Image 1 (cartoon, rainbow, N blue to C red):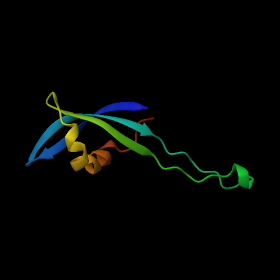
Image 2: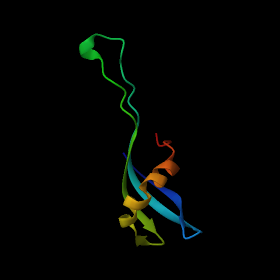
Image 3: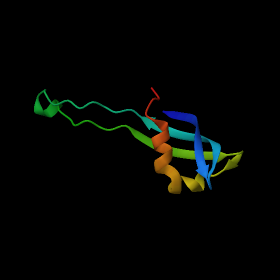
Image 4: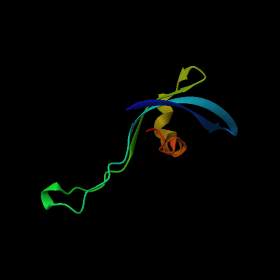
Amino acid sequence: MQYTKTVTLDINGSEVEAELSFNYTPEVQGVYNALPEDCFPTEPEEFEIIKLVVEDNDCSWMIELVGGSLIDQLGGKHE
C-alpha cells in the first residue's frame, strides 16, 4: 500500500522538511506449528521508497544516499 509522510532531512547542518512517498508491506507472521505443507517463515515488513520531494523539487536521486535514514524515520506505523 502506498503512503506519503513528511520527514526531516539534515542537509549541511540545516533541517529541511521533505515529503516522502513509499510502499509499505507489513510483517506477515510465520506459521510453525501446523502440518509441514502449511508452515512458512515470518516475512519481515518492507519499505520501498518511491519519491522524495524537498521544497517542491523532485529529489528522488537522493534516495540511494539517504534511504536508510529515511526508513528509520518511518517507524513502521502505517497500518
